[in-house]
Length: 293
Ligand SMILES: NC(=O)c1ccc[n+]([C@@H]2O[C@H](COP(=O)([O-])OP(=O)(O)OC[C@H]3O[C@@H](n4cnc5c(N)ncnc54)[C@H](OP(=O)(O)O)[C@@H]3O)[C@@H](O)[C@H]2O)c1
Image 1 (cartoon, helix red, strand yellow):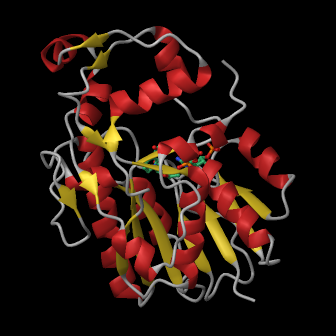
Image 2 (image 1 turned 120 degrees about the vertical axis):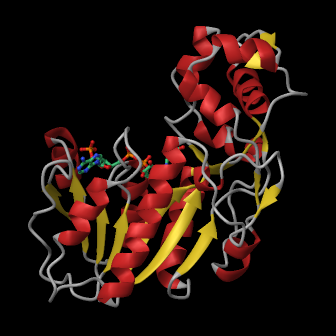
C-alpha cells in the first residue's frame, strides 16, 4: 500500500493523517519541536523531529520510494526564498524518491488584483515578501521535480479557518475594522475542506497541476470578523475608513488588507471532485464551536 509522508505535520497535516488512517495507510510525519513530536507519537504514525533551518537530514520510512509526500512547512518569516524547502529536497535519497509531492502554497502568489476573480491561469505577481517567498518555493519545487522525475501538485490556499483557528484575540483586542464598502475581498477555506482537498490531490489530480483551494464565496475581512463576533456574542469592533486603517493597523495586517482578489475554485471542484462541507462562512463558522472566548 502506498505510504503517506507529511513534512510539517501540524494542524492540517494531522487532519490529512486522520483521513488516511481510516484507510490504514502507512503514515510518517515530521515536526520541528519536541512537544509536537510527543503529540505525534500518540497518533497511529511514525514520527520524527528535524529542524529544516539547520539540516534536512532525518530518518526516512522504509517504504519511502513511491510514497505520497505532503510538504506543509511554511517558509521562514524573512527573505525572498524558502531555504527550508530547498534543504529538505536536497536531502531526499536518490534511490527513495516519492512518487508525488503535494505542496501547500498560498494565494498571496497572485498579489493584489483589484478584487478581480483569479484562476490558475492568472500569472502570479506577488507584491508582498510573503507571496514572493511562496512563489520562489513553488518554482524551486517544480525545478526539483522536473530534474528528479517526481510529480508535483501545488495547492494555492487562502485564509484557513476552523476549530481553534478563529481570530479571537484580534476581536477581543477591539482593533478596528475597515468600512465594508472599502474593505478588500478575502478568501477562505475551512480546515476540514482543505484536508479533503489535500487527500483528493493525492488520489485524483493529474501530475504537475496547480489548484486554487477555496470555498468559492469570498467576502471581506470585515464581514468575516463581524460574523464571528455575532456568532460568539462579542461586541463588534469599531469601523474606520481605509485611510485611517493605513495609519493604525500593523504592516502584517495591512499586507492582507491591501491584497484584494477573488479565488476561482472551479478547477478544484471539477477535477478533484470536491463536495465542500462548508461552502460559506454561514455554514463553516458554527462548525468551529465551541470556542473558548
Ligand atoms: N494560516 C493560514 O491561513 C494559511 C493560509 C495559506 C497557507 N497556509 C500554510 O499551510 C500550511 C499548513 O498550515 P498549518 O496550519 O497546518 O500549520 P502548522 O499547524 O503551524 O504546522 C506547520 C508544521 O511545520 C513544522 N515546522 C515549522 N518550521 C519548521 C522547521 N524549521 N523545520 C521543521 N518543521 C517545521 C511545525 O513543527 P512544530 O509543530 O514542531 O512547530 C508544524 O508541524 C503551512 O505551510 C501554512 O503556512 C496557512
